[in-house]
Image 1 (cartoon, one colour):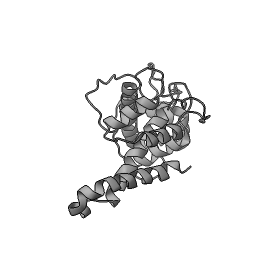
Image 2 (cartoon, one colour; image 1 turned 90 degrees about the horizontal axis):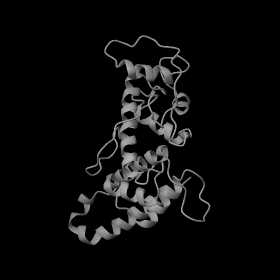
Image 3 (tube, rainbow, N blue to C red; image 1 turned 30 degrees about the vertical axis):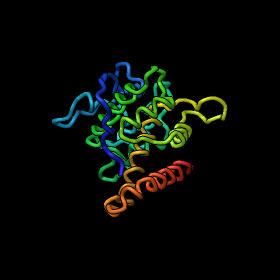
Image 4 (cartoon, rainbow, N blue to C red; image 1 turned 180 degrees about the vertical axis):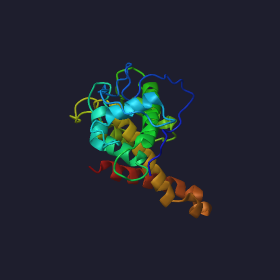
Length: 226
């Protein structure tokens, strides 16, 4: 199960700017067509309602995966890849309707804003992508001390372009960075649930190293899959 919140990290300073379909300088959303403006339901945020109706291009009252993908872009103006969009839909489609209603959209909007702050914090060189050392720092701050081999595998899997084999992999764009972090968190929690250390209390010291190897193998197998 995916989490509705990004992992906590360090004592960073967040910079709040940019949001879905903002008319400001957000680089993570396309400008919406605001020609259609249904009256916001009582108690809703008018600005957020305007974002929602801007993404809901077919005026159905809910957002499809295709509409969401068309609305979201990375810092280099490439669309979010479909796998990330599907992940976001699976997290916030609480009623399992296959679409996102306004209340679900409100949670998704905040989630992306929070991840934007995380991304900016770890994009130390302000390149608009996350490179290997930045990825390592981010995951370590979330509590995931992965081996160099695993980090390299993640960097290659979520690179913004095919890895040529020459030089460092291309950087990881915002959408893929979110997905990489969520996948590492989800896989780690799944492993922990299935391999409970409480079952090995008397053999803890002897098994710790072995469990580390099993975890490494588990993560490598899953992350190596297409």
